[in-house]
View (cartoon, rainbow, N blue to C red):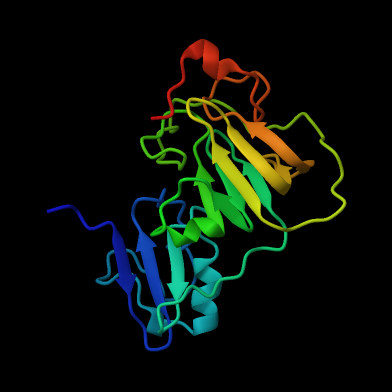
Length: 216
């Protein structure tokens, strides 16, 4: 019997779903004030101990898409951020937020339509998503040197295509932020390194070919 990986926590007015496959334990849920998430409690998530508005706000803090909320009819009612953004984290993944279309992502991962943590070290066993394999072995502080071009408009769908044995191709309006929080780059097309070896991080410089990077 396969291990259960997606868990549903039911409330009177709103339900919360947690996807263990995507969770990288950033702790935005567990450190939130209130009684919605309490480590060591069974069940650890109890939607009725917070208002529906609080449930939505806390769930939307999750940067990996592991958490979503559902109406009692089972629908996802989250709205995508008006701006598509990617934060190049300090020695960690790309934190992506917006109206996302990650090519190849399973239909049963609805959270990654709004929020995702994408591997940039090349070591994840759950590519294109991060699984914390970067910890202790990947060194990049998240600086962004290039500026890109100002966007004439913002929003719209951001298509993210993980090329086989290659970079993440971006198509759509997006802002890239350095790990410091600085808004660093704007544009509508880019290729982001996901092998961990580019000398022009976060952008691809073709290093995946010389190191023999494999995406599977």
